[in-house]
Image (tube, rainbow, N blue to C red):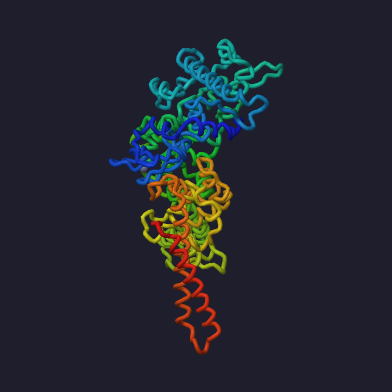
Length: 621
Ligand SMILES: [Zn+2]
């Protein structure tokens, strides 16, 4: 398998390729003062520029749609690439050679081996296409396609081909093109024969080229056509340096633009279903290749749906309503549920898959099927109900017993309560009774739904203009952008000085990254802090703090930094003094004289410290 890209490659890219140079390929940038650049955001529609680039630190942030990140994120999200692909693209631009971590004895070969394998696949795909069109023995394949309503234009659009029955058709062809046995074996195009000679992996089958997002062929899916073929109905490329079945989606090269612009992806089961959907006008359809739809496929679709903090699109699965489909739907509850509200199910009428549906009832029927989608949660609950006779009380009671645990598995409490209410409606039962049943099954006895809902959420993004937080924000900007100016003074700050949980979280990240006392700053420091924080939201905030200009003309001004810290401490002290004054008012100076005097003494000390800080804080905002 392809190893991880070596860290020094990424460092070399960062050194040689300034972010503004990468962004300028897509966005016109204008100077915005203090080393910052501004442009129209490529991630959302806007008329006035809110896309900010801090070229020195190598991070960008859009204050319109809150897209943020570094050069790699930028290329990934704009080009819909994986991390590795994005690094490879940037490396090419920077003139840096890509090397991989665990890439065998000769890791330097890895990059070029990938290209060799891609070339072999391109030639193989062309060979299969020519066979389908010309070879007499391919008639069985041509008939198969025509019977399913696919004409020659469709074959060409999808690059469908035919693998001849002989053992060495492709291997001979590729050898003549200069490919070695090792390359054919590594790419999964050939299998190892008994005497060491490789032979064609796919024989006597229709083959669909499987492409990556950029449109390069990385593998094949092959369908059995003949009675005497004892192999599986579908045979796919094995795991290779190019082909990772947990990530590949058939049709993604054709669908990616429409998925991104329509915020929708349709997941079907087979190659012919993808073809049928696209030909019927549902051009966002993709299929997994010989494996169930899994978390890595979700990642691929999320990248296409261009979400930043939230998953904006809809993913519609088509199921034939059988057990397998229901199991897949139910499994989604066990997996990461962050996206459960974006998952939908379209149940095929009469168990017809999209290919059959198009053959029998035409394009419109396919589009109707997709349009009929219901939320995955609803599908799962209704599937649980379907086994019972809801006309009789015993049936309804049993159905509640079966469906309540399904509703209870929903991790989002408000969504869960909503579905409990709907379940009550479907069963014709009392809402409160169903709610109680669902909640009872979901939470441990000590924890009521109310309490659970009040659990602290991830820190919210503070408003950058909140006047009460402006000093906290400015100090955190310094800590991220110019840690040297703060030095040990920042590390020594009491945690209570940060009142916004999000800033406190960034501060914790700064400490975890080693603190400002020893930090030198620059891109490496920002990256370290980003890696040290707990959540994606806080990570985005770090980027935001790195990009936003400081509120001072002279960014090297040491006095500005120390006056800000003094001001921050003074504000914390003011809060403490107010608390203490409140306590004094509640105390009785006569009956509680000892406590009163102690608090009064404390107050005087605090007032004196505050006065000293106030003098140091002159010049701060
Ligand atoms: Zn934007």
